[in-house]
Length: 274
Length: 258
Image (cartoon, rainbow over all chains, first blue to last red; front, side, top):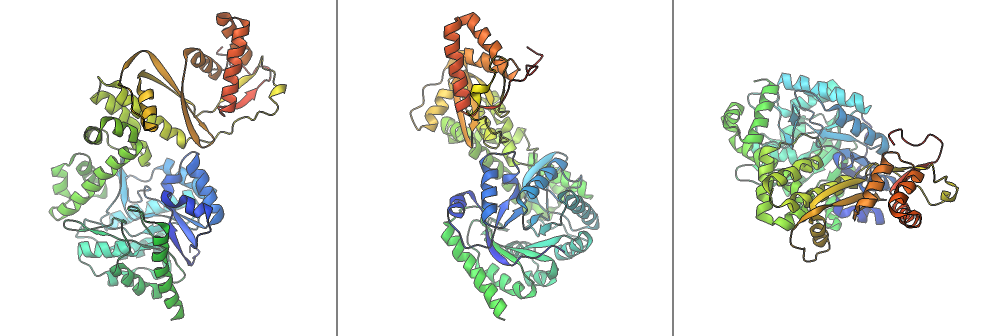
C-alpha cells in the first residue's frame, strides 16, 4: 500500500514560483506537472529542486497514456524515473485515460471503454510503469465526454479492480466525478460511495465550465458548491489524504487559491472533529 | 471493436476529422467527439502561440493562425512532450512563406532559444588556474548546447527589435548570411551574431583543433600581433560568457580530425 499523507496543497504554476520560493507559504505540499520538469536541465529543473527543498512535492503526469493499446513509451518512463529519483515525491500520478497510439500523441486525456480487454491492457501498462518507476502510482479518475456503452463495468468498478490487480492507489478528482456524472447521467454520490476508499491517497478539487452540450473540465474557475458538497460527502469515508486545489487556466492571485484551500481545511477539521 | 481499433479511429478523427472513423466510434459520441476535437486543436494552437510570440507579433494574428492551422493539419504531434510540437513549425513557415525567409528564421531563433532554455546543464570552467594551462596544446570543449543558426535574412535584427519593443527594420535578404551564436550563461539564454573569422575558429576548435594551432592558423591570415589580439579577445569572451566547459592540455588531447 502507498503510504498516506494528510494535508492540504496547491498545484504549483509558473505565476506563483516566486511566491513559493521567496516566502514560506502555508501549504502542506505542492503538486507539479511532471512533464514540465522532465527536461535535461536549465531553470525549470533548478526551480523544482529549490521548491522540493522547501515543500513536499507530488508529481502529476499528463502524458503517460496508461490506456494505450500499444503499450507505454519507454523513453518517457525513463525520464520520469530520473525525475522521481531526483525529487523523491510524495506521490507519482497520472490519469485513467490514453493520449497516443502508434507514435501519435494527442496531448489530451482521451477516454477508455470500460471493457475487460481495456482493463487487461491498462493493468499491464500500470504494472510496467510501476516496475520502471520502482514504486506504486496513483491513478486519477478522468473527466470524460464520451460514454462507450455498452461496457463490461462501470468506471468505479474498473478503478476498484485496477487498484486490486496492480496495487496502485487512487487520486480521486471530485470535480471529474461531477463532470462525468453530469455528462453521462450517473449518480456522483453512488460513484463516491463505490470507489475503494482505502486506496485514495490524494484528492483534486477544481472548477468546470458549461459547454454547448456537456460540462467541460476547464480548471479555470473556483471550486463550485456542487463539488464542495461531494467533497464533504466523501471525506468522512477516507483515511488520511492529501487534498489540493487544481487550477490550470485563468490563474488567480495565490491569496485567492489559499482562501479556497482554507475552505478545504475547514471541511477537513469538521471531519476530524466529527 | 478492439481497443486498438477504437484508438486508431479516435486518432483519425482528431487528425483529420475522419467522419467514417467517428461513425464507428458511435453516433452517441457526437458531442463528445467535438469536445475532444476542439481540445486537440486549441491545445496545439496554444502551444505554437506560446512558443513563437515574436513570430506571431511579426506576421500578425491572422497569418499566424493560418500557419498554425496549416501546421496542425499537416504535422500531427508525435512526441510525449508538447514542447516538442513546435520543432517543425519553422519548416512549415518556410514552405508557406518562401518569399519571406525572415518569418521562418525568426521562428527558428525562437525554437533554438526554447530548446536551449532546458538544455543539459554544463558548468563552465572558472578563471582560476588558467595561467597554468599549456595553451599551445590546449583543447577547448564548448557547452554541447551551443547552437549556430545561419540566417539568409535580417531575421536576427527583426527578432532583436521585437524583443526590445522597438520598430523592427524592413525585411531584407542578405548577400552574406548572418550567423547567430546561441548559448546559455547559467540559466540565461544568450544570442549574438558572429563574424566569419570567429565562426571558423569556433568550428575548428569544436572539431578538436588545439588552441595553439588556431593561433597559428589565424596568424597566417592576419600576422602574429593582430592574431594574438583577436584570438585573445575571443578566448576572453568565450570564457566570460561561460561557453567553455573544459580545457584539456594533456598530450594527445587534440582530435585526429585536424
